[in-house]
Image (cartoon, rainbow, N blue to C red; front, side):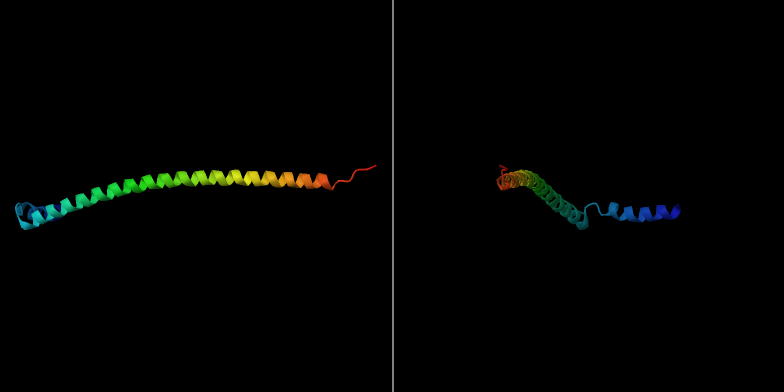
Length: 93
C-alpha cells in the first residue's frame, strides 16, 4: 500500500509544481487544438451518417424496383409459356 501511495505522489507532485510553467501552457494549447479537432470530426461523422442514411434509402428503393421487375418478367414468361402451349394444341375433329 505504501508503494502505491508513493507512486501516486510521485505522479501528482510534478503536476502541482508546474502551475504556471510552459509545459502546462503547452498542454492547455494542445488540449484546445484537440477539442477543435474533435468538434470537426463529430461534425464530419454526422454528415457521413446522413449520407449513409440517404444511400440506404436509395438501395432500398432500387432493391424494390429490382424485385418488382423480377416479378413482372416471371409473369410475362409464364404468360408466354401458356400462350405457346395453347397455340400448339391441335383441335380434334
